[in-house]
Image 1 (cartoon, one colour):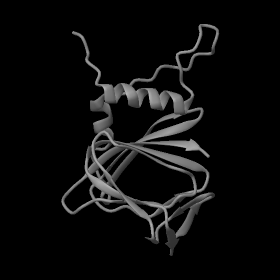
Image 2 (spheres, helix red, strand yellow):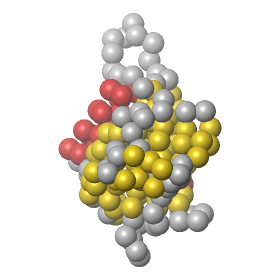
Image 3 (tube, rainbow, N blue to C red):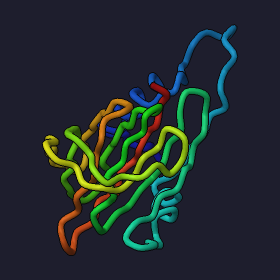
Image 4 (cartoon, helix red, strand yellow):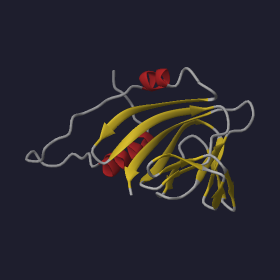
Length: 159
């Protein structure tokens, strides 16, 4: 049986490969290990929400980490001083506020801040197939409408 790959899936795979330093390369290049995750495997990682969110890291490779996330409620404001975020929306809809100023947040780990409120940011609608790059140091907050949910892949790369 031939598997059909959508242009979106091919494009996302190429984007991830470029970002994470995974490439086809020459036979002389040290080849990274191939990793495959089926849609069913990824869905199982977000099957059980805890306080409105399920997040699971499923890849950790040189150059970045990759997470699958499902939310059915508004997230906290986040600022990652050392990591870029790339959101690739799989299903559902939400809005994300990016930029502006954060007040009332707290440091949760070195270079990581959460909580508080964002003022003056720009709202971006998120829908299946959308990709959003958020540079390190940029505040952001996912806003999920009532009775809705969103599932996305987040690729975290060093600044």
